[in-house]
Image 1 (tube, rainbow, N blue to C red):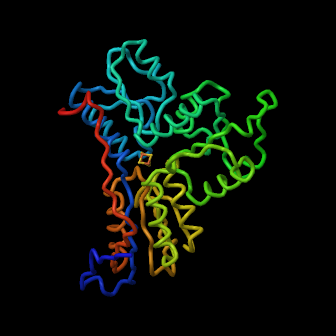
Image 2 (image 1 turned 90 degrees about the horizontal axis):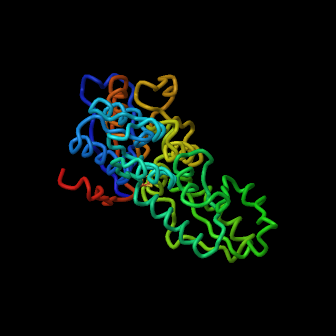
Image 3 (image 1 turned 60 degrees about the vertical axis):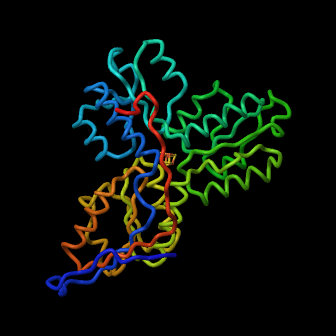
Length: 333
Ligand code: SF4
């Protein structure tokens, strides 16, 4: 894999303990997060403040705070938005009843659902039209799962969180032959390895189950997990920058732990570092979840430079060039 030196130490720091920072690439913002943030920024510029946003646009307090300062108002439910101000739906997707309610209230709304989440919604709808019962592999309560389950009538989908759930799932007696009429879809931000185990279990039990044409775990999640694997086995400590409610960030920490890091921590920013973690650490692995801005990564490197003689080595496992356009209503704003 290609590697590049991105910095070196200065002479006055030479008495400090050396620290190699292995910087995973790709890391941080994905195309869906980029687009969602642009949507809020462009909505503010088109319609002025306030623009309401239903749920955190992406799971990062830093991003939310910056948009709030620009005039975005974050709420959890559409009921908290006035009829006469625009509202943006978050990148995680929303149940169908949400845009339907906005339309019935004649609100202006923009859907920032990531196109890769919308693809999963479309798959689920296609399977349901074909009379299949859907197994959704994901985490209960995550907004993406709530949004995906909300694309179909109650009872059309069963949530599978673990291999044990996959073993225990029994097609309902009331729907004879359902075992032959199953399909699965997944949340986009799962652990690639855990999901493979769940899918293998389901395939063994239901060999005729319909599968996604292309993996539902998105390119950004997959690439970030591969990148952290590539640094974790060399690093004694891995720091993942991301929010505790960011699914893909939490998965990165788990992947780092399983891939050889002695310790791995999820931190919101440099302020959350406990410097005792660095005892006997000569190599730090550093990455960021898909909703964490690069400024936070640079903040951690700067904090390390204040204490160690740092050399940064970026370990690149994939190049990304995915870009999603904003909805037409906001183009040219
Ligand atoms: Fe889209 Fe994947 Fe980013 Fe989620 S993590 S917003 S699915 S690209």
